[in-house]
Image (cartoon, rainbow, N blue to C red; front, side):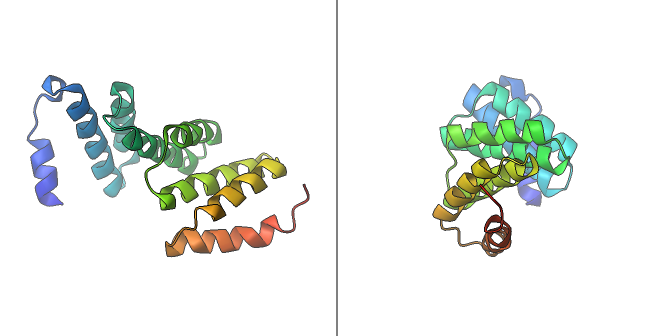
Length: 151
């Protein structure tokens, strides 16, 4: 990772890069900042990448999902919902991330007390058949609450 950071930091004038490469550059900068737990910088770079436009639609979906998850961590449910909806519309490349997006939407709608929509997103998350331990645990935990909710 240190070598990747060194290479990325060796780019002095990112505005001279072609648009798709510049977008990827800012996505990588954002991901590296997230790895370092620097959420402010990560958000700034991911937004910049999103504004430029991702070279691949899958990358755009993943980018918006990350922005949505960061907004949810900050407690900004409105922007979190907006970004996650945009990520789902843009298309998320893998089933694990798609399940995470649907679970996040389920939790947002449970907080809004819109239980029918929450159950719908929960079913979609479950249909993705995620394999990651954290996602599977989260589904099992939510399943006990969802079964008791009216609607």
